[in-house]
Amino acid sequence: MQPFVHLHVHSQYSLLDGQASIKRLVDKAIADGQKAIAITDHGVMYGIKEFTNYVAKKNAPIQNEIKNLKKDLENKWGEELTALQEKIREAENQLFKPIIGCEVYVAQRDRFQKTEKEDARGHHLIVLAKNLQGYKNLIKMVSKSWTEGYYFCPRIDKELLEEHNEGLIIASACLGGEIARKIGDNQISEAEEAVQWYKNIFGDDYLRSRRSRTVVQKYFRRRLLFGNAAAQNKPPRCRPNYLSQANGSQCGVGAHCRKIRHKNDCLQRRTLCK
Image 1 (cartoon, helix red, strand yellow):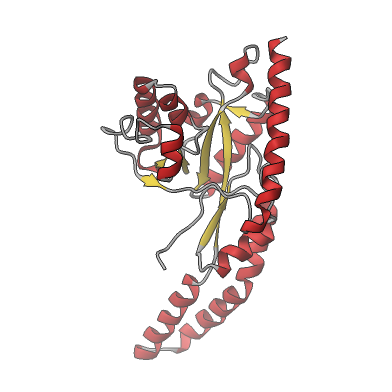
Image 2 (tube, helix red, strand yellow; image 1 turned 60 degrees about the vertical axis):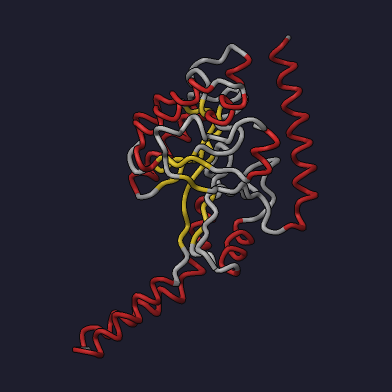
């Protein structure tokens, strides 16, 4: 099977969106032969501790095996040493990797603007921590999205992204992302500018999401998603398929949650229009 890792995953900590528990998501990924999985809940990182703790528990037997093998390295030489080192590498390859992330809301103006209708919702953006510094920067941004940017939802802005870009990988997210929305609104030059901004800040750590052809045809019948906006910049592609259930049997629950969320969004818009 070709290696595959889900980079856009919502657990039950994404209220009215994700239905799967951390445990079920990790167990399903391991059962499917995946080497890692990301958790990218909407605007929050509530599930990260449970996520990393459960993965550590699943990895514990392998970690113990690696520890014991390394103890034997001191007494091995020649071919025996080479064989033991190979066993250690094989054991390390069996470890499951938790990828810490968040699907943040990026304010359309900035996080301090809280007066207009457009300020009530931000553009979606997948942010993944690739190292400890990235994890710290992600925590800072998500915290400030609540303490400084909250307006109907927790929002960061491009100022925070530029200030805390070290150690982070970002993906252009779903159809609610900035690039997709601007292409959908036929704002091609603005979409190109947005692609270039992310590329300048994050370099090769900026990935553009590539949706399935059926989704592209449904929403952008006349344009291939990101085809024009990224023609010159060509950021690397990824397929962070939106995942909110551990298996197909939960799809009915997901539909009901989306209806509730849509109703809440409508109520919010009415409040803003008063």
